[in-house]
Image 1 (tube, rainbow, N blue to C red):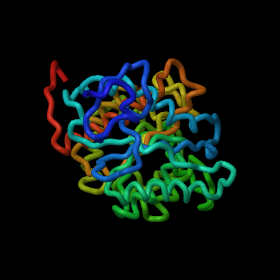
Image 2: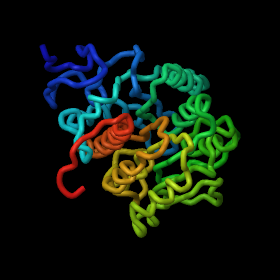
Image 3: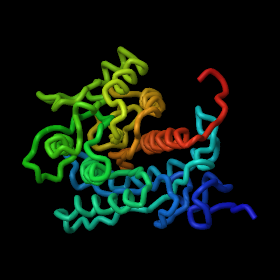
Image 4: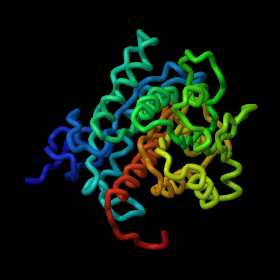
Length: 322
């Protein structure tokens, strides 16, 4: 008998999906089964609900819940524009959230890194929902322990390469630290959507938001592919890479950013890369309106899963001029 409703708790398989009321039922990301059994799992989705490293508005500790709630419509239909159900091919589960003790802040990075290492050790890839952008640092450390120095694709309004003393819990400095520690290879990395200033590029290729607006998606993708090649690639998507018109619910909004359609078109053009992990961060529901920001985050994360499904052999039918 087919499962109707509450797939997150009632499903017995990590593939496929069941009938859900969009407006009801147990919430998980894309209605995926909640489990910590990673046998045979291709991707584990997990929340990293931490926001004590912000420099302006807080609230993104609530981001994982909001992104899960905003993902319900994406669990209904075949994926656009691919025309397939990614979960017929790709075994994706919701692993739940990383437990973080906010009253012992010194232990936060190690808690996140250990959480990630456990998932990665299983052979599953990891899709992380933040949380502020600092969480990308321990996540990247865990990925680099397996894959070596990573190419980073960073969607962001900010460079996050302001320098610190190597110990700060700061969502604006951790990528300079990652370069200094050798876990990020800047010669293979690209920052997209920037519109704040730093005196040094720290070796990254920077495609500012105005540059993308002027030169277009295809030109950006050509640079990204030429720079990264076959290097294992981690995507860190700060939702403030989008213009506040498309992502008001974030801690440090900056006008002039990418439109949702530009970000999605860029994501959909990355399928040829060796994609090893991704995070989507800085969704702050207290500052959101009508789930605009959480919806954008859910779509970006969903598209990454579709890229992996296509790599694994998922095939569909494109309808219309896509």
